[in-house]
Length: 356
Image (cartoon, rainbow, N blue to C red):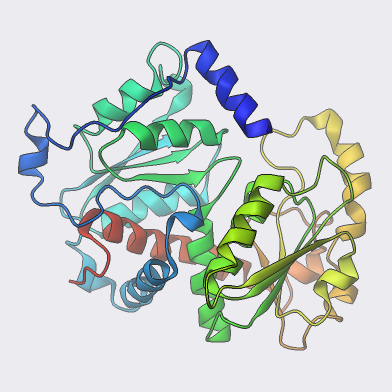
């Protein structure tokens, strides 16, 4: 498929190397010794939300609720630990929430722009993963391609977290789940609709999230190869849905059918980072039938909620009266990036179930 061709091309270019295996945790630097014992399953890499099992997500959300209510209990949770934050794409919520979160946990977050880096150019991702594993305690990556996350995870001996690529956005998923629980009190049995451009990271990880956590999601967008869900994601979610208690999904091309009687309507920007300006008019024409308005929200449940992971464009994926209206919880989502990511970092570095 498309993904395999990309991987083969990257390997031919020398950026990626086949036959890669993660190196031993034993390090001649002694870092494995002075870091102390590691929890079972270490290092646990987060490529998509499906990198986590339901019980692990539940554990992270429980901790997120606790540290949000009682942050002082966690002031030394990651004492003197360092998070390396690799950024190839622009960021507001991701960078600020990760840096702030590490500071509040007693550690530090180190921003590194890949625009200034030899990563994948003069130095392979394979070598970079091995090098940074000897310096820091975890790595987050906000990058253009899933290939970079896969290669880093194959070679790092510390946790690697996908902070957004073209395939998933697991940090946003955890924040969204925390937000839904705060407003609805549960996840299982809920109905969500995601409408708009369905060929993106948010659609894919929301589908995975629904199936793993036991709720239903309707996905709807233009009937076009440029906007449809990748077939590999569909097959992945079909497999995940076979687990007892799993959720479900449907894919369609009609806004009103998708959002009728749902508990949550979810949108994402139609002009994601990287969309060329000359594509705007064509994309808007295809996507405007899926704009969420106050009138369309009336066919949802009376107590329905509106979500958008931000940034948002009023007048495009939703109208201003929706995102600024009483059903909108978009800024709760944004705040919960901080709390959910703190809980994720503590769980990956100290072990799932760790408590102060």
